[in-house]
Image 1: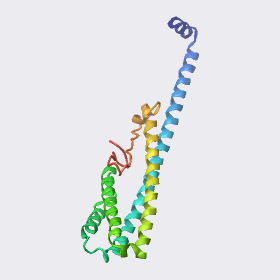
Image 2 (image 1 turned 180 degrees about the vertical axis):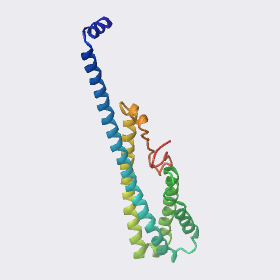
Image 3 (image 1 turned 90 degrees about the vertical axis):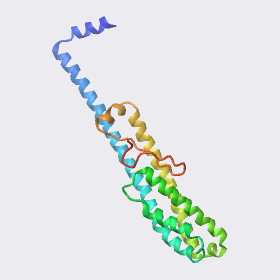
Image 4 (image 1 turned 180 degrees about the horizontal axis):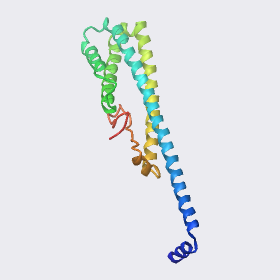
Length: 198
């Protein structure tokens, strides 16, 4: 086999070798550009998916104060829930990484669950039209957050898989293409941040 290759190269003249080298270079450039474009598109999809989650989290945060107001009149003795929710709502900052945001959202979800249990304890609160309206709105937003989270995690999985396979494994580090962490607030296993995982 080696002899055959050496015979082929010996039989080629300088022009043929130059054309062969140029065609290899053109193919390598084509593969690099295609891989880079694919990785750039998947990175943009991750960012768009994160924006969808963030939008729903902001909607939920906007609804929580109104829900708290509807509940306060009925559950004055349950101040811990209200205080904790107010603290957690103030705690979250847009520049927080995904792990911190995930932890804060878990706490808010836990406190909202306690608030839902209060409705069982105070039937008049459960019957209140405002409470029902806000609780239904909150449930709708929670469903949208869940769908956005699933989409985000699928896009992150696909992006990270492109970086782990050929040619992304070689192109990614050359162009400083980041991997991303999953947004998993139920199992408290969020890693990384929406910008990149380090």
